[in-house]
Amino acid sequence: MLGIGAAATLAAWNDSEYGAANFTAGRFDIVGAVDGATFSSHATTGAAATLNFQLAPTAMAPGNSTYALFSVKTANPSVAGTLQLSAGTPGGTGLAAYLTYGVRTIAGTTCNSTTYAAGTSVVADGSALTAGGSATQVVTANGAAQVNYCFAVTLPLTAANAAQGLTMTQTWQFLGTSS
Image 1 (tube, rainbow, N blue to C red):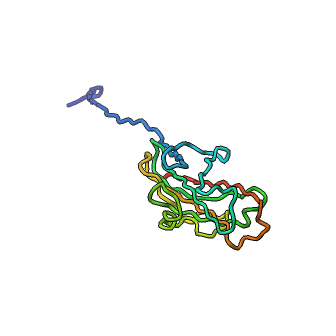
Image 2 (cartoon, rainbow, N blue to C red):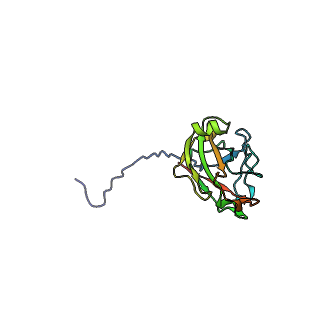
Image 3 (cartoon, rainbow, N blue to C red):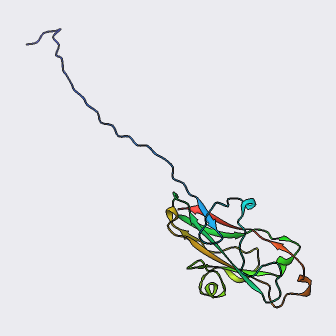
């Protein structure tokens, strides 16, 4: 029989395990090349790459079309994403009112009338220079594959005499979004 004041001592042992992790945000970075091979960053309108058109776009006549390549890929390291082409507001003295253009993705880095015709449309042929792409293109992670855009700029046969001597500047943006 236990009386008042008797006490029992209970002992308990314990042990713990912990899990920890370090986190680092990935990055998304795209780079471009006018030759399909020498990639660098052109992240602002002031640093835009100058496209190399086949026919110098400085003396266009009615019926002339000229073609230029611009390739885009992710940097390494970078996660994958999508690209969306948009056009800025043309500058110059009014030639943009007469010019039309189209953009297609092509398999290689040779951009001319033949490869353009075989490409996949991004901007419909005959579009105003203010038109952007309606679809996005997939860009793979770590620079694994590039997207080759072929631009075709045309001064239509129907261009009025008033187009003579006019100028135009244009900047296109490739907006990359990580996925």
